[in-house]
Every structure is written in structure tokens, then in C-alpha cells.
Length: 339
Image 1: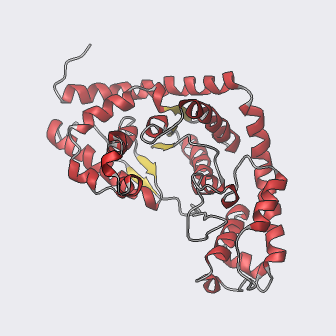
Image 2: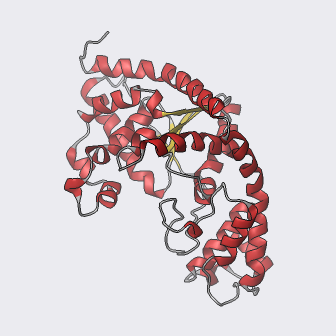
Image 3: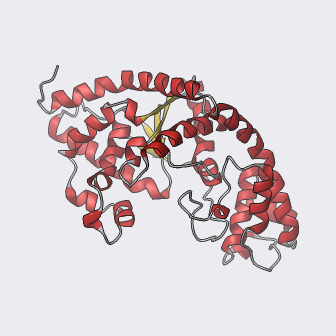
């Protein structure tokens, strides 16, 4: 079993990243490495340049992201942790796959429609071909499984379509060039929403810092954000169905449940009938307890740039070793001659 997953190094990680993805990365790392499998986790810095960016900020954010991931429990000795830019095979394979991918496929990608908006003519080519690079990211390593949320299912389906067409056109059924990866949808992946709008996902792109809990927030900041989180005047219900039309309340209860490893039903059994004046401080205390060790480790790691660069270099070397055979096979299948 080989799992591949990536995250863009665009600013601080927040609670949604941790509960929705990174906590599951750590769990998968522990499970897969124990069974003899392999996890590759990468920082998608090549993807980051598909949108306007500040080069200096991207460099700093990449190092900060390494520190945050390690602080959260990603172990560079048990997983391969690297950034795309140090493995040129990602970009090479994307170009080779561009001959197989189809314009119609990419035009249907919802992320392209959302990010380009009405100004598609002004969007970068990199943004349009972003899904092909995503396909290269996983096909390059013969990934057997890829963790995906609801918003990434379409991208993995495209990667499978590209791999299947490439194998059909340029390889044999007995000796395919690419493995078709299967999705992993973690059953306990939490969907964390904004503290200011319970109908919108928690996001680092939200202009209001009060909308999210950053993993770098100190205890006082966390308590302040939780106490100011948007809610309604009604007390908490005693059953989950009572949260049906109360997005903000459902979000806070869901966060408490995810952090404590309990169910929403259990949380409501403890707090049903109580107002947010009691529930918010309890939630704040749980957040501080869970995030304080991560924050302390992050601060420690962030100040050692050489150590962070060494982690990336070591991971990139391992990744390149795995990638070379696949890239060679793709070149050969296409009839390309190279040194």
C-alpha cells in the first residue's frame, strides 16, 4: 500500500486542515508504516504558482508548513515528506500527461470554474492544467490510495481517467505504465466550518482571522476566537436533529466532538439544554489542551531553517528514487529518446 497526498504551503495551517486531513495523515502514517506500506506527503509549491503569489512568502510558507506538519505528528523517518519543486519529475510527467488529458475533461473541473470565475481569459494556463499536475503527483509514485475529501473526488477520478487512457494508448494490459489509485475517504474526517459563517468552510483565505483557529494561535487567542464565534441565542438541543437548521451551533458541537473523540450525540447528552455561555469556555479549554503541544513544537521547529531544509532535502531524495522508474517508463512508452 502506497499513499500519496499533498497540501499547498499557503499560510498557516488551521483547525480545519488538522481535523480534516493532517490528523488522518498521522493515523495513516502509523497504520501503513506498521504494515510495511509507505506514505508520501508533499508540499504542493508548484501548484501554488498557478495563482498570483509573493515568491518570498512562498519560500517562508513552505518552511513553516514543514514545521507545522512535523509538529502535528508527521514523522520524516516513517513518511516521505518533501516539496514538489525539489522533484522535477512532477513537472516532467505533467507535460507527458498533457498529451493524454483532454480539454473537455479540464473544462468540466469545478475547481477551474470556481477559481477562474468570470475572467477565464485572464487566468493562468497553470490554473487550467492544475488537475493534470495533480494526476502526475500521484501517478508518478504508483500510488495505490489517495486520501480525498468530497471536493477532491473529481480530481482523483480525472487522474484515473488519464492513467487509464495512457495505459490503453501506449502500454499493454499485462504491463501498464500507471497504477490506478483508489480513494480513501476517512470515515472520521471532520468538515470544519468558519467561526463567522457556519455555512462556509474554515479557510486560510478568509480575510478575517477571527473566522479560523490557526494551529499557531496561543491560548489567549484561541479562547478569544471561540468566545466571539457566531452563534444563536437558543440553548443546545439534546439530540442531533435539533442542530438541523443551526449551522454555527452544529459546527461548534462538531469541533468539540472531533477533538474529544466523541460523537455529536455524546456531546449533546453532556451539554443539551445549556447555553453557549457554558459551552464555549468548555470548547476553548479542549482546543487549548489539544493544540498547545502542537504550538510549542511548531515554535521550536520554525526557528531552525537548516533542519527544515534538511527534512525536505532528505524527503525529496527518497521521492526522486521512487519516481525515476515511472518517469522512464512513461518516456519509453511515448517513444521519446532521452539520455
